[in-house]
Length: 278
Length: 154
Image 1 (cartoon, rainbow over the protein chains, first blue to last red):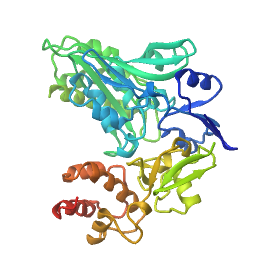
Image 2: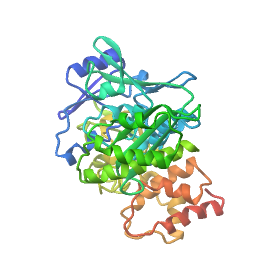
Image 3: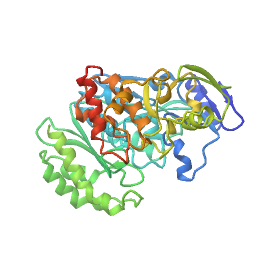
Image 4: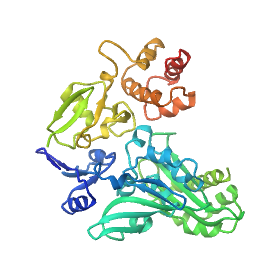
């Protein structure tokens, strides 16, 4: 179905194959559109050819199974936050989905939009998904493609439509700490997401992801190595983080200068570790 | 293809640029000025409407995504000449000041009370974090909402 209005146009494919074909023809996929409609404020031109994803049932999947969580790209933050309650290994993602922006935006902005929006450094879901070691499933011209989220963010793999995210379940705990300049509404200037196996009493297989500090969220691998094998101690973690903030080249932006983002990172790590203690 | 949707209970058809924000459709084409154009970034909540029963900012919803949706604005919350319970509580508690943010507050709180009929003070505050008011201290707004529970009408 194609609506031609004399200005922009919008297509609403009903199958993944049609969606991929529309993208190949230049249509820009839109989900919640919360980033897209702010294009004029960024002095950007709105794309003329849009593609609504409302007709694609594959993008609405929501399955929290014992071994794997399947999270469709069109799930809103609000829907995610509600679905993930009560799962310790997904608690960081639940916090990210439930604390981002404000309630109205959380009912609109989607998982796929958060991952796919280039230029949005302060996504809450992306660092939480990195800490969860998530895999992105893309619809491409060659069929479905599976790609680790970090590789997708780095621009590797074929371009495609984000269909869903898959997260392997395991007996671990996760947490998410963010610092907006106000208590709510605006973007966080720094984000720390943590996921670790604490079953032995020592930190094992820890994943720490940092968002909003650099242009793209990424893992803090040097800190992961430093904390592996230690006990869960928020103060110790903060001290270790303070020694390693030089690993980041923090961005200066209107909400905060780079040095400030770096200065709050250790505190956010402590807060995330404190959440893990509960 | 025209965009068909329901606006305050009335079926309408639009033949416009699908990228047009719902907010502009409401204000410029239908004269529904209750939704206010303030930040246009989804931060202030002054343009909040109900889309399929959910309170969301209308500034960030392109009309092309709303095919088949039901839109309710503050003008359509209650029959003409009447007020809904939140609007009435705002008047009873003398809450309204300049009025710029209040239509959005009413839309947010009406949806919120439908989901959470007996909220705590903190829950009301959390529900309102996306509705910014530069006049009040918010507390009387919250008192007004809590009064609905006390009266057993929430």
